[in-house]
Amino acid sequence: MFIDLKLLEKVYGISSDNILELIIKQHALSTQEVIDRFEISKQRLVGLKNQGYLKEVKKGIFLREEVELLRKKQAEEGRLEKFNKYQLMPAFKTLDTGDTIINKLRFFDCLTMVRTDSKDQNYNLHLKDAFSAIVKTFENDKKIYFTKHKGFDEVSTFQELEKSGIIIPDADYNLKRFYEEKFLEKTEAKILNMPKIISYQKTVEAVNQLYKLKYVGI
Image 1 (cartoon, rainbow, N blue to C red):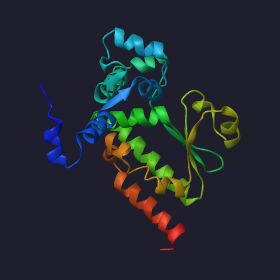
Image 2: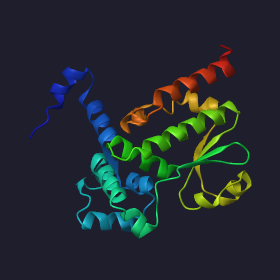
Image 3: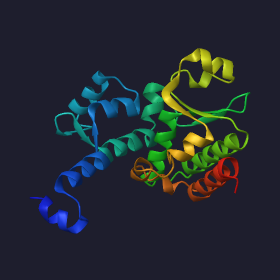
């Protein structure tokens, strides 16, 4: 089947180059993005490909939907827990200082279950609780930190967090940065279908209101 990008130019009113760029960003993942997303080694990714679980549509390019559906299948069949002793929850915790840490791997795995319509509503409810924790953290003028998975369960105090080295670089947010970077509303959030989380819109409104109260005086 031939896709006529010139025809799509007329439909969307943007250049074919921009259309292609958007398609790739929204629907494809590079080798490194898959490795980063699942915190796996390149060797493990090659194994998944060689075993037929994933296919490259072009060298180093994987379909986002296929990658996410594989993750969903692994979770529902208990393969992640059986072979890696990995569970999708808890994806967040609040520390003694009132700051909240979010396990990036678990958070986006739970989101995968939600966006691919898992019958288990516990994932959506857990992300709803995570959103509530984010709002409460900002209400108390504290920060949220996205962390790596390994070592997350051993951290319960801010002092332990600082020593652990699991904070992902440039993944700490106070209210100002969270709002101004539109974390919940940017394109990536829409690609991942974050609006499917039960309290999504309520959380967006709460963050916006907090920002206005603190920085705009409304």
